Image 1 (cartoon, helix red, strand yellow):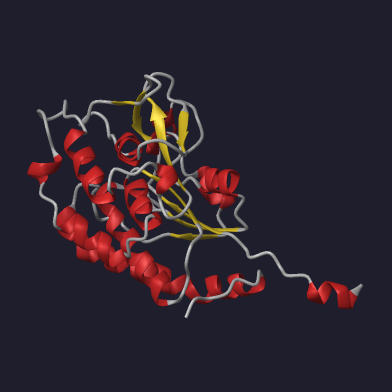
Image 2 (cartoon, helix red, strand yellow):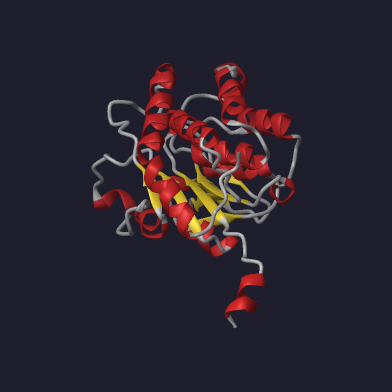
Length: 261
């Protein structure tokens, strides 16, 4: 039996990534991705909420951390924001995403991907695993009250997924049958008030329950709209990932994950 087992090819472990919400703090996601790239860690499936969905989708389509950083840094508010304050729509953002990602559906991305949105009427979580990538990302990052809800093909009015599931590790596990998940919490040190969630769970709770490793860059001094601090937040994301790298590599070794050279 032992000799027979030796010749059985082991199943390659599936490694997932769950990127959390946080607006401009998402530059820390890019710093973390850079650290993963430098250490030969390649994720097989990605899930994201809000800015995490935007960065996650481009990563799932083969963009590097540097590619995404340059793309986001090169955008102007004029091409992104349309309408009047507190009643803007997501058409400008949708146009840019469609342009840069080639109008692809989620199913056409290079790697399995999902985005999280919230139903604006019921406040229930909506897991998006197919359909237009740009629509999914706009729904996932539609932060109230600045933007009007995004209406999907089913007629649902969708808003920022951060209200329902800010680090969707549970959905990555459920949808892609992952063996190991790394999460990035951009609001790890934020003090929440339970009334913010209409009596429901803290939206990061499932992330912590299902992640095998959670990165927690300390971004408390930065606001979700503070794009001027992008380099500092990027560096904090990179530092956070490098600090847990020995533990992460050790855990991956135990499940026979092969580091890419």
